[in-house]
Length: 587
Image (cartoon, rainbow, N blue to C red; front, side, top):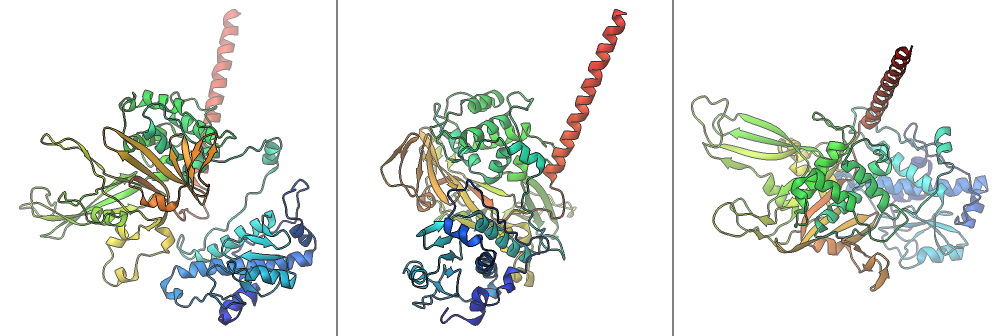
């Protein structure tokens, strides 16, 4: 690797044991040598190499080294102090700096993909495999294509997780992150899955408009593409066939995910979901136009009310695990400095598109809306009474902040104005709003706002990953208040789609492209970001958890099982007593 610093060269090609064997205790990557007899799609060239133990060790060690190097480099780039010391490798042929290196898995060559230098090297040197250091993808020169292999895929995951475990120190003092443990099938699980039939899981399906129900469709699409809700319902955490509730919205969610992740790709009509909504929410019944945000809040309440683990205090249901956070309101008396703090729950954040004075904001962005939302405001003497000042009320300053960030952030932009006085008709604010693909929420937290002096200069504690969120869904409203239509964008894996009721658009299909579910037209992330958002949803990049502890959902599930078994025993005892009483009466 010409013109590259020794440290970069050594990390990629030198002492491979530096990164490949420094795994977290208990997290050493394990490579399976099993090859499925029915795996006809597997590259025969990689299979033949892996059949030789020494050749396999050479390829996998080199692959582990380059993947670990890039994972460590990505982590170091998050820290400004280390960012200046990071150097990029260069192409061995053209000396061009490589932002996305491709590395030969047989020697120390690294080259660029766009100019074809890595491909030329594989051909001239007679080498078979190279790896994209960024994604971990392996290219086979003999197949002339990128290949997928279970062994390589498992190695990539284990290596990246091992690097992350070594660099995550913020969850428990003086203890590293809990080692990742892959799921190993037990005998009982293997027996249960033996006769299972694999079905395609495309996870993208249009929803039929049942009569001005676009408000329902866009919220359901945001639920479908919400990673936490998806994982909950696809893991059978709520089974509609076993549920004993009537008019259960959780059952409707279970049925919805079953339909979306089915082999069928024709549009689905959520008639049962709509009927259940009408039964449990009178304000949502009928075919009148409804507000998507109001339905969103109503749906959260309905799912919360019928979900396992739902309680009034410290609720452990999936809605609170996903959306629940906390606001903190601090009111400071300007005379005595007394601070009165109030903590309130939050499920979403509603942001103004106008300033406090009611004027239209010049440049609306999500960040500017959040700054206005958390900006300190003066309270008049009659608006606040200090508990410490005994004589009279004085002016005070109120500031709102986010005390606890939820795993999923839901933002609503207040586009609909309903005048409380006068004869002015309600109107819609069509002001454009710019939203980012990622957002760091640290500046808007109570912790950041309470820091002063040198503490503020040092920044908030912990890595940025604790505060970073990624966009996964956007809801748009087109038209006016009395005659409008809802559409939405959503991310599925790394692709963006635009959903318009029963039609959805993919960003990589040419126009026209007709499928059974409707006409597909091009859509891009740029189109999503340029749209006038009414609601947008972000998911935390790295979820928090309490290490070395059994998850609360498992504890709750075990308690539920014990409780249900006790109820069954009581029912059986009551039935036996009834039988005995009947026999005694006959005697």
